[in-house]
Image (cartoon, rainbow, N blue to C red):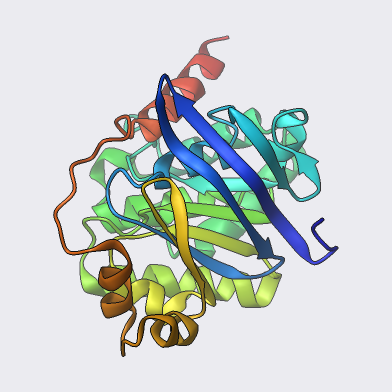
Length: 271
């Protein structure tokens, strides 16, 4: 049973696709305000787990709770508890930065009277207010990522999910993005749950780490604890010792979450 300090809890979580167990009875907890990394090779069950956490997939069995809400039975309440930045782009390029934010505010039923101030505050946070009237199609990759983070914070979530948020970004932009994320966690007490293939990011930012492989969590703890468990000196060495050095194919279903979310936004606008 999760204690009052736990904001994410999974117990014996299973997801089957036909005869294949993509996630095989995993259990873990994340504390309020914690920066938690969820790592694993391609096809290990990472994306499937995140889709279950964010209500995009229903678990085959097991219990999953976010901010006290049963993710399967209280999906709407669970959704209000988190924001998400997908691996794939999910912004509407034909809208301005402000319009993307306003559309998202509408999706989450944020009162119109509160939107302007909240949007400006968040765009200032990610240093994009001076471009609020610019079309997203003119933005660099780093600017789009920052806008996606701002958008994910609009409804003031307790949890922020980041799925490969720095993929394809240059080193300077990656460092700046993680500065924003750490600031959110430390100043606002927000829980950060992220995946990344850049192990140095996890080592530098995460307070705790879970490593999943072949649908099972093979280890969890701080970087120091993982290194001690594996008799290694760095997170990368520990990770490779736990998951092997063989190249993996992406066996999980294609990650089109960002595109699906973008379509949902467009459908909402057309109603």
